[in-house]
Image 1: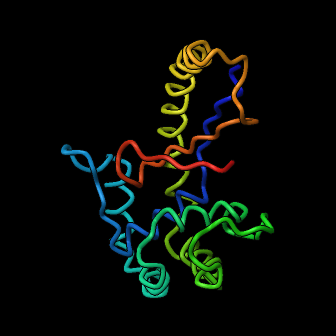
Image 2: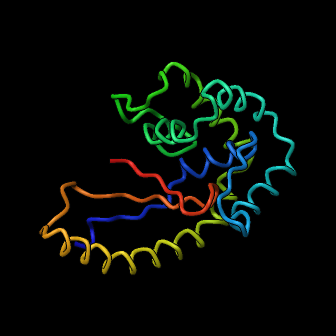
Length: 175
């Protein structure tokens, strides 16, 4: 039962939201403000005067700032810096053509911004949080299955991707 719900620190989502935060994505639903990791990443990136932000903003504006569609797009690709397509089907509502070339823009941003170093600085926090999630989820999934009178979930698994670069209590995951 422990493998029904899996947690994953995802470099694709980290890269995407690093760029989105630099493009003006400021949504936050917590009165206390942004997560300290988000604040740290934003400060680090603002110091770098990144030329790739202009190109990233074009995509962000073209897709009407629909963040969930960007997440769907990112989950169709491999980890950076390669960002190679690994899903043939398209599951988004926005036409896939609106994202044409975005992988090249993000790959350039990845190198220009030094995302690998920033990711490695933040990864221990992601791992700590995932351990907390995993421990608390074991009981909750068991309670849920018992309540629903199910022996197993009607899905192969649920993957949750914690994302400290988005507002609190928001997560994304592939099927």
